[in-house]
Image (cartoon, rainbow, N blue to C red):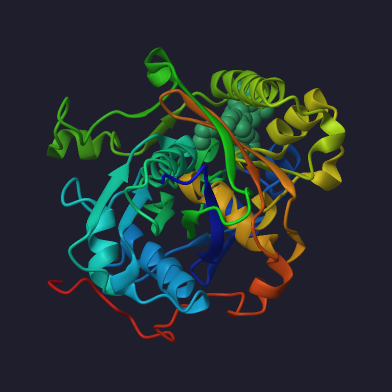
Amino acid sequence: MSPSRAAITAVHGYVPPDVLTNAELARMVDTSDEWITERTGIKERRILKGEGLGTSHMGAEAVRGLLAKTKTNPEDVELLICATTTPDFVHPCTANLICDMVGIRSVGSFDVQAACSGFIYALTVAHQFILAGTYKKVIVVGADKMSAIVDYTDRATCVLFGDGAAAVMLEPSADGNGIMDAVLRSDGSGARHLHQKAGGSRMPPTAETVAKRMHYVHQEGAQVYKYAVAGMSEVTHDIMARNNLRADMIDWVVPHQANRRIIETTAERLGLPLDKVMFTIHKYGNTTTATIPLCLWDYESKLKVGDRLLLAAFGGGFTWGGAYVTWAYDGAKAATLAPKLNGGSANGKLVRSSWL
Ligand SMILES: CC(C)(COP(=O)(O)OP(=O)(O)OC[C@H]1O[C@@H](n2cnc3c(N)ncnc32)[C@H](O)[C@@H]1OP(=O)(O)O)[C@@H](O)C(=O)NCCC(=O)NCCS
């Protein structure tokens, strides 16, 4: 018999140790700690340093920690989905590399590309595999090395982004808690406001595209801001209406961390106090697909069985989406099972893909 829903049964994250502060950015471009803090809420972000280390390195660290924490053998994982917008390569996909690095062999693995909404998209896909009864143990990773595609001469974008990864385990719900509903939306006409001009099949890389700095994130911030506020409000409102949820019934909002002001406006429109909203933006910035699972990891010790969570994201595409999740395990107990920072089972040893 197919299960009625999938539940998140564990979460683990990884952020690289190198910190890039606002003060350091102010020495690189014409900006200030005051401007960045006031306009975005960001104080610092993590940057992945080290030759040959890509998004897969952080994803693998997160998955390794997840496996260790849940005492799961890599052979027992049946599917791994990685949401990323900064894959190590155009191909193979980053999910394949992560599986290889952590010893998950011969199971399906693929990437989902939906920019900042990628984690919600990937979670929704994984949910369907569990609902259909196809798999019982699925890992969803959100991982991005934004520092690889950010132009550190462009003050309008370089202050916003950081690197990081986090992974969740999805299994059939044992007690009815889990993913109750999800909404996915997209509008490709929004591409003009947020994209990378070159490097894809439309404009393959040439010496000229590199010289013109066309391989970096191009964002019209004020336009994206406007759509992001509208999109986040729309999905959260829709999910609440579809599930007969009032604001006082929500325990946690888990928003994509692009700008503190966008999150505050979304909460205000929902009528939710800020102490019910998860924030990591001050310390990690916008880690794209990793923001939502990193929030879950950061707040894990506060999460109780049955807590009602509202996840919401907006990003490039445009894509946006939301999910209503009831928490399925004792977060306080689980949070003690693995070291909080960078606690993968590699013990600091660098594990590269088997062919690199
Ligand atoms: C990027 C963002 C923080 C900019 O904030 P803003 O208040 O919209 O600022 P604007 O872009 O209107 O720029 C205002 C001024 O600040 C300046 N500015 C931009 N970045 C700056 C920086 N890092 N430091 C100092 N000044 C800066 C601009 O040049 C502009 O100056 P001007 O008025 O002299 O032309 C904001 O628009 C934003 O968060 N956008 C959404 C990002 C997002 O959600 N992305 C989602 C997908 S990842």
